[in-house]
Length: 454
Image 1 (cartoon, rainbow, N blue to C red):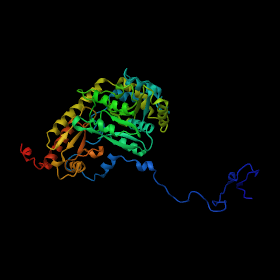
Image 2: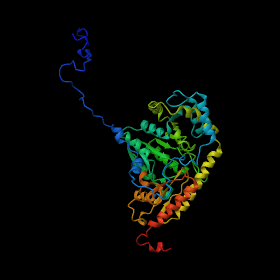
Image 3: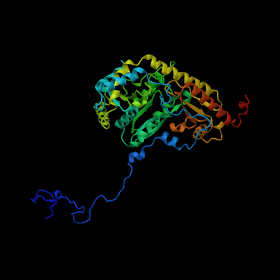
Image 4: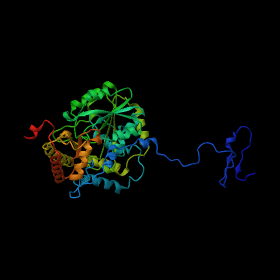
């Protein structure tokens, strides 16, 4: 008898499959050919990874162009306010992090949805009489991007669809399609300061529509919806019984001549998952602290959606505990002057950029009202040597060393996006170079010589 074979008594009560064969020689002691998996290497990426594509990354990586070596590169393409060092966070924010670290209280695991005290702080910060919140309505996430991912994952199944703005943040498509969720694009109207084409949007809704994404204030447009327009959006959602995923990461980052209204303050009937975080308003995107606010006063989501979000949060066991430990102080102690100064700078840069580019023949900037961006239309008929916005922005890099993202990144051709967080002197220089570039390549469109002679 083989000393490495363990046999069981054959009483008839146990199936032979329980025989265990231990073979230290490496040779199978089971007679006959092995069945099942073939013994060969075959490692392939998953369907989910193959479906995952960041269009901005793909487009930027495909731009095989070198900047002009005689001009310092000016990047107006990155939505990170910290890049140039001119917009530091407030010292109170930094001190809150130091205190949390020094306390030694936040080195272990937190609940996957976040510490109760941290969720209470977020609920208190966003609470209003028209949109009440408690800690149970808050889930902390690793940045706003994870908040969006969890919301999509809990609301939609593969084969369903979501409605996404065009132009819009590319991550919506990246996340949805990786999950097998179809993306339908509704149009924003540049001639109406990027308001939604409500009739076109509503026409896209069908029985498979899982949610409607509303991004306000907008990336890439820098637009801020009025109260009346938000009410019309909510009326569509109520009429069609479609929940809303509100991407409000730029909430309150609006200029002084404008008013921001959180979507949930305008409806008691439409269930809304609002996504936000520290990244933009507190100028710390690398700290990766976001949140989901659950607004569901008619209990349409019920326990199922709440429980689903909790389960999904358990996949990575929550965001950084040090930042969570600092959160209460950050939300309470950041001085108003910090917000005011940040917005004053952004508005000044936005006005400077808008006014300068408005004076350049062939360009049509759309005036922003908040966030950190503006979109600029290119009258392509006046630049016939360029086939599209990709070629326009590539040549802008090659000749002027100014990098703007083409509208293709946001599914909106013949536009480019400008980030307005750069230092003022850099913004002036960039605008001057864009003007020089356009003047060199501008041609009068056929039949418009009279206009060009003016």
